[in-house]
Image (cartoon, rainbow over all chains, first blue to last red; front, side, top):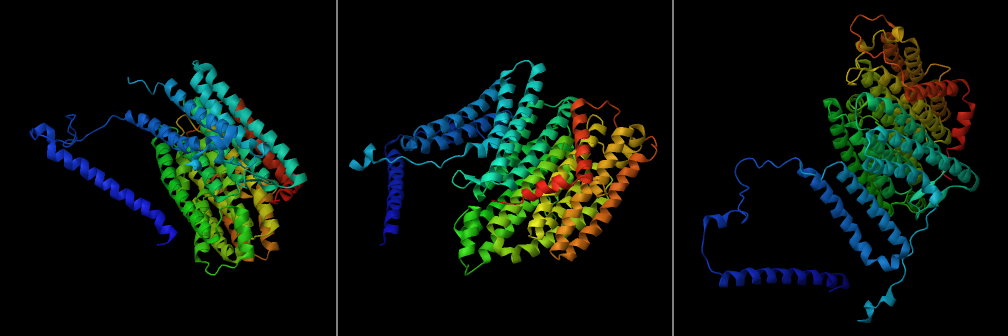
Length: 120
Length: 500
């Protein structure tokens, strides 16, 4: 086996471990839990709201929250690798990230002042 | 375990940055961000709009000062390459950046009265214009396919929003959606071209691709040629070259008129900058492959642009097809592949900016609130009732048609003489014939303006506001100046053809 494939062996081991772990947790649960069936327990979400049947129309106002969420989600994607490399990047990297975050915060301030976050 | 000790960390050397080289982009983008900040912090709407306009103008003026410094610097010491070769500031780039700045400041000026008239949100609009302009200047000085792609998105996304900015008008929304869907599609095509080019040459840097192809013979050229073709298609969309032009009439017609002016002038300069730069720097040795493709593109663009405009009855649609035809003339200049041809394309872009913005500025002033009726019948008698404004509009139309003593004539003359110098007589003949056909629809608008009204006219008799007046007057003067004393402008373009 070449070095190239040996590196991928770790991925195979991880897949095996993941399958084993999930199987173990669900299997043990099935063996030891009590079974008292009720109709409400078999809908998709145990919270009780059934998304099936009728047009599930969501409020158009959610889209702004979705947008804001995506912005900060993407911000996090950039911050994680930056945080790992912060030390070698030095002051330059710090300043760059501060500028980046400030611009995004500005977007949030703008949305806030526009009254987007108020659920009227 | 000692591998994790901090001592093992070596400092990452970030590429050096020549801040002056990227200062125009920072000035424009910074102005856009500052406008958003001003909008968020200022409560009183009475001062918000003037402050935002001032910030926008400040950004353009700062960028212009930086471009002035850069022009003298690169002319004296050669091109500035910075950010690990991502950015390359050369005379060519500075020239077209200035063209974009002219388009931007004009677009800002004519937007002031328009936004008030249509009661649209000014700060957001102005911020989007500034961000788009930042993307345009960035793309003009980008020297790497990845940087070009990022800048392409930075310039395009605000334009999609701007096209749909008049939310109460269905046509504007339709324009925004069409532009967005087709624009996103063309970006994907461009990106695929980048990927294939990278696959064939092992680099995304334009200079590195050029060097690689100069020193190596590709055993199999399919990937590279397919990549080049996809790059051409993606950029052809942005310059509105046929057969990638289908969005142009609908978007130009539906978008708010100042946005149409901005798209016609500044976007075209930015997109042509990339087109010329990519093919001249990365693929100069593949001329025999891309020149025939450009020939077909130029001919189709000229013929379709000129002929399709004949059957239109909406002034903004006619001007959209005329913008397509103008792309055809610029393509002629570039297709020659010579220095003279590139110089002609640059001069054409400069003069076209004044003509296009001037024409759309008068159209904006002539239209009634609502900005939704632009048919030829609506404008009947305009020149009789408003002689000055109507006369200037006819002057702009004649300039676009290429009448002598206007800049439009010099622009076409330079392109045609470049084609003749490179013995490209087929393009020359087709170009001249297209110009004759185009003359007809420009005169058709002029005739409608000058013929007596029949009662169905629908144009404004509002006083011209100061900002738009400055735009119309200076653009008309510039078109006249480039036509009467073209020498300095031709010299300027001659100094700007080089990438070094």
